Length: 275
Ligand SMILES: C[S@@+](CC[C@H](N)C(=O)[O-])C[C@H]1O[C@@H](n2cnc3c(N)ncnc32)[C@H](O)[C@@H]1O
Image (cartoon, rainbow, N blue to C red; front, side, top):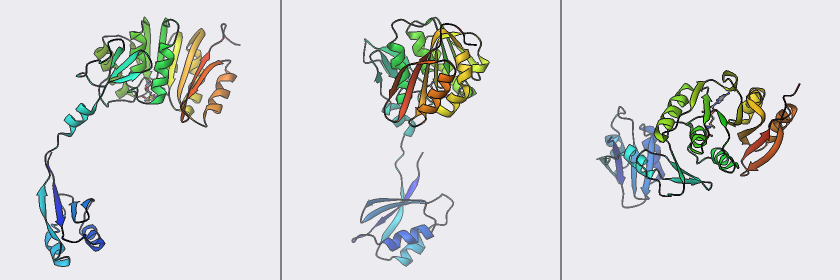
């Protein structure tokens, strides 16, 4: 897409009064390229500011210039880079990228379509917890799957039964594409933990602390005896609230990790059902 900019040039630094005039004439953005050269942007339908500007500031030359066409989509695609996470994963945020690390397991994602690119600590810490497990869990539930990154990673580590759910139907479409892009398969459920049936050895919930606290009883109900719950997305300062809620459900804290801003907590369910 091309646009145009009003380019202003002057021998001396352009005075602030010119900026005031530009604003008054409907300017929406200003790029001060240098003290003597500015590029001003106007909505397409705004009245032409050139004549009034020349009249008010005769020492400043001004005229329209076409902006060079920029392939933003292409630039975005080429800015995408493989990302190494933990010891075992390589996130490839585009179908076009090759895995530069032969020893790492590739996780292919569709670029920029749903939360869960692995760049965020809350996702990366879940991937690390997963890869550090002594053996692949027999069943995984990913609550709030977003892109499906955790579900796909679980499959790739050999988990034979993976279910992913999300309250956002668009996220499920993306999670479906992630499964296809990675050649893995998992069950998709629209809704939250309460809408999923069965018990799981490992449940991920990378969801904000408030939501996590609210759905903790549903998450606990999906845990097999002795199963693990990884809660992530807990903003610093909120962890105590989540810890108290989990403890009241009989969940035993096994591990806590933080980057100072976010917390990831791992609990184990009791071996026999409470109550
Ligand atoms: C932070 S993203 C996590 C995405 C991915 N699992 C990851 O770890 O990167 C949270 C996701 O949870 C979903 N979500 C929010 N509230 C939910 C709820 N109560 N039950 C299920 N999913 C929920 C959102 O739609 C969003 O896709």
